[in-house]
Image (cartoon, rainbow, N blue to C red; front, side, top):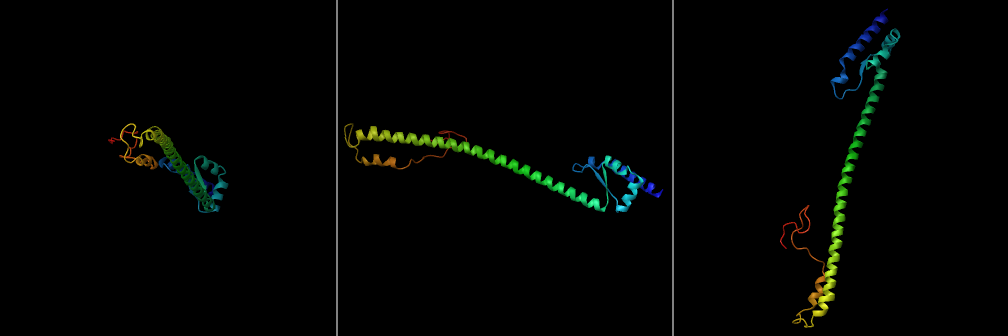
Length: 184
């Protein structure tokens, strides 16, 4: 008779805990509440007197724990939290990787554009030097046929052997050639 009354008290306490709805009160609360009974013998006595107690408690989202099961439950919760933290870290790493990829892609596009512009500039420079050598210097340098002879024709032959030097300010970000406001 005393066991049935004790089991009734445990069932009543389960109902009180379930009515508190802790999972609705706190945003990060687990989906269940734990009722701790401080000894295996106390839990066994209540479960023997009321065979539906465990199932009823679980349906009410209350887990009945004894010292042994509480330790196991706490270890399982800690493992779940570690797994959640690992998953969150993996999501953050994935997001950072996406950002790095996007930024590297933009940089690559700029470098490809720069490569094309440099090739075009080198080709234009080589054409200008070739034209100067072929069409201008051969016919004019020192011959005097189109005007007075050059005082130092070797100067014409040496200037293209040096790399071209940019004069003026570098272009501002986002502006194309000649749009940086510098006067050349």
